[in-house]
Picture 1 (tube, one colour):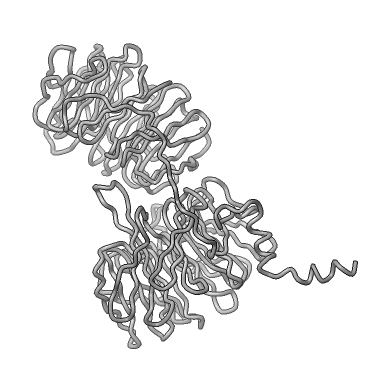
Picture 2 (cartoon, helix red, strand yellow; picture 1 turned 30 degrees about the vertical axis):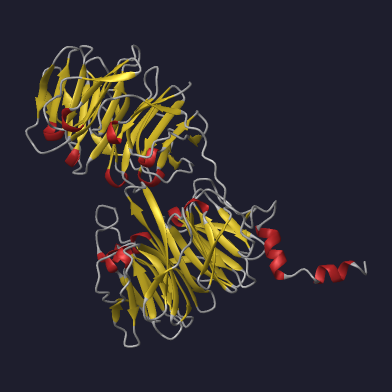
Length: 611
């Protein structure tokens, strides 16, 4: 008994926090936060520490709170993403997010204070108050600044919110207090703005046209800025780390292979940065040191508690804790051998669609300038071009031939020997998708909400109810079809009309496929995969951040492909990434026949090895 009391008394608040947050084996300085009420589909954007109390914000109005002993998970009334949290419960604690949402914490619950205005149609209104907000900073005296899309800057002066003229239309993503009464905001295209003591905003001369996602003031004239730029040649983002000394900007060197940086937090002796693919860095003066990754998921939010524990949050419910001072381990990555082979096509034209007969395996591909290829053994043979316009879609015709469609609303028919024009919309509208049951029902969809139906004698235009582009079609039969498109749009055909079928995402959707009405996948921007199980939509956990441009499947197996040679395979249980050995964009995939084929940039057609 006499020996137990001193040991218990010696248990520091920091050790208690670590015991609750980071149980289990250490992973290169980062540990999973055991016991946190996360689910694999969570996307966690923001972490904020008030002493040792943590607040974590995420998609669908998710708020996680840890008081040092227990976790609490709650859902806000406005179920939109929570992007930033700032302040403290004693003075004022606020959160901001999508649709201009501003929430205030009363010590127990969060109350919507601004934004999320709903129109007469029951949908969020297109108004200035609904402009998405991404960054939030507090001065400790009850005043706040929030920033967002279209150069939006809002100031809470203790009594109400007021818009301030930023002088820019570039999206703003970060804001920080400089400590001397001034405020710094930053965002797209290297935009950096300084709010002087007179309340006016002026532009800084940042030489790097990067999108700045986070800004951290270490002193009034010492600010770190972190972000990233998209490079077409690399097919992805590269990270940027800048330092502003009150007079000018200079780039810091985080080393090779750095992806987009998302969040910064002050740490003893410097700062910590985290970003895409789980990368993290220690910053001390001009020196930037890469820390070994604790996860492969994107890290989007970061905070450091009063005792020095760093907490990072991100995709797929990722929540990590560490001291941020762990000696960096060398990052050694080995690339697994590709399980896809590139086939000979004899062309460098971009390929937009690939299709194969489910029984015979006869395969066709089409693309730029009327390009049509037919598979011949292990290679592809060019057929006579179908005019000079681009072709974006293929499907079976009712007589056993093939349909190809694309620009100017043209549809062509191939009977195995020659092409003939099947339909001409005579409008500058591109057909992007074709669907056929092979028995006489054929549907086409494309730009400006275009939907066409083959009646057996002619193509007739259907009322889709949208002006948005439709990129893909799928359905188990002619009475049950889905079309996907811009900004999370999903349309459902019930045999009588097209109706919106909300999938819970605002990402552009480029692919749709399923095995039945109770098992449907849609794919889109930034690795988006949503799954419908017959009751509702949910996020499908993956580790992919590439845009997923197409999906196809057969039986329980599905394959999705996208930018930078991305490929994912679903085995009926989970999605797994597969190396393709190809760095260009893959824009089409077909798994309906005996082979799995993917096609895309530079005339590339890949065939997956094995079953």
